[in-house]
Image (cartoon, rainbow, N blue to C red; front, side, top):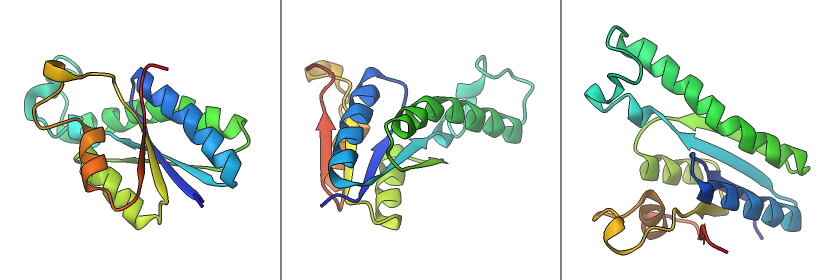
Length: 150
């Protein structure tokens, strides 16, 4: 039985499908949904922030803006889950997405991870695989992947 459900979120259509599925799964199991967003990796890419946040910001200001943006990403999903009457836990963390997702699952006794896919296949996929693929391959708990297309 799934009592602790983790849904990692980011801004793409697959996330919306994962949230919808996760809500239904939580209702069927009287479960808690954990919504996780991994954000800090943006600030750790050196010059990536230039032009996005401006060149005159120090690392702490960049990190603060990244955290603020991450909160904006997670809020609508949390609201959707809460409005469905499902207990919700939200968390923003930094680091490598697949590693942080797996670590969060291990640290919080997650029973299942629900992740949306972007729908890319073949040559459009990165050679090393997407975050979802890495989580599927390396997770200690079951991972349900929700395809973008119905």
